[in-house]
Amino acid sequence: MMGKRRGNGIAQWPAMERPRERLLQEGATALSDAQLLAILLRVGRQDASAVQVAMDLLRQLRGLHGLAHCGLDELCAIPGVGSAKAAQIKAAIELGRRVLAAPLSTGTRIRSSTDLFKHYHPHLRDLRHEIFKVILLDAKNTVIREETVSEGSLTLSIVHPREVFTLAVRESAASVIFLHNHPSGDPSPSPEDHQLTARLVAAGEVLGIRVLDHLVVGDGRYVSFADQGWLKEGGGIA
Image (cartoon, rainbow, N blue to C red; front, side):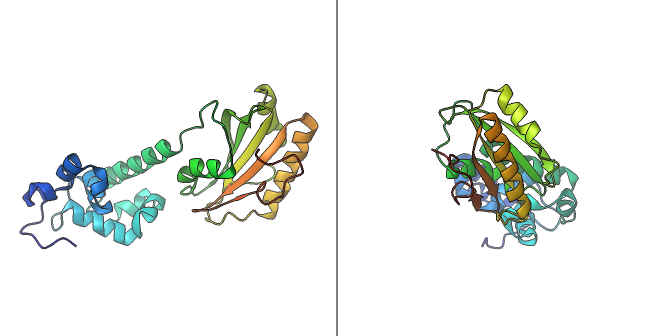
């Protein structure tokens, strides 16, 4: 906890206690969540420094996870955070997501469901809607490309085998992996998830394209159809 200082402005603090100066001298890892957030805020409000506003923000939103989930209106409602600062915070969070969840590079070899979870979790965990992806692989289980098939509520009508396998045939994929998120945070597959997977596996068998796995991603955990033994023989990641 920071001691009481005369005045509210960060400019009055000793140089090495100011967030920006500390980052330049010691690196970003030396700063607390509130100090990093204060650099984005730049200035506080009349009765509080940027760090104090950042601490208020994290307390009211229950940490960084709450910050990532909140809407712009929620941010703007916090004293000292207007629309411009809220936009800066949201932009920084989205950049972080994109760095961690950049598209899988062509030629990347997929070795396990854990590989996929580590790659996609940072982006999918905070989405408020469902997104369904297909990853196309060659005969050596290396990535050809990935594609978002649908966004919104996942239903049998939205994700149609025709759309998925037209893409796979066009790219000459030997196998595919499906992946979608549960905004609730619970990755337990629903009956609809099981039905959809069965339809996709059956369509793949007709075309000679193996379904290696279907991952359902939640908050900090996931369920793999292949790991659970729910796919027919021949599925799974080698």
